[in-house]
Length: 228
Image (tube, rainbow, N blue to C red; front, top):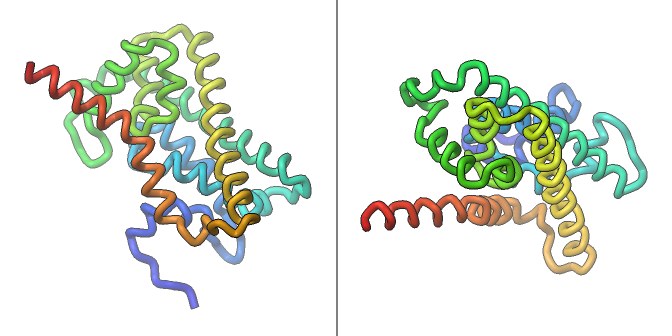
């Protein structure tokens, strides 16, 4: 008997990965859409990104089975990472286009549940500090990765330069996290150290702490500078 749905499940990446409809696993489609939404829609900043990719590596066989059965383990994970990278690339392109066409409107937009102007301002400062490299760094930072392509569009970053960093960052982000999730899970399981599937909550909390630490530290530094 399946457990009753509770809204807190929406915060658990494992819920999306194992989602089924009429006996079909649709996790792969949900994962690809979330990656696109988080990097291409400014409303996607609250979606699970890093933890979702790490868990996708753990459940790579389950995710890919709905699309195609690939016997080779490495190829299976590589194809999954490539699909995720492509979704991230498309998402960033949409974000860039939105920023170029109507980004300035966001600075006068009122805050609501889906949009916080402070995140846009933080992303712009981050972008101005790191330049084109910000597109790469932003991939590994929650919230910032949602607004970075929009800011790139607002400041009219050269399209060829943006696409270079967009493609590079997408592949780095997806391959590092998905391969890390898959092979770390396999390594620990084979040596009977720990079954990561039974410790999903700890994984999610750990990744959230690691990925948000730079933002928290930077925020504290800015507050200290402001006081001085």
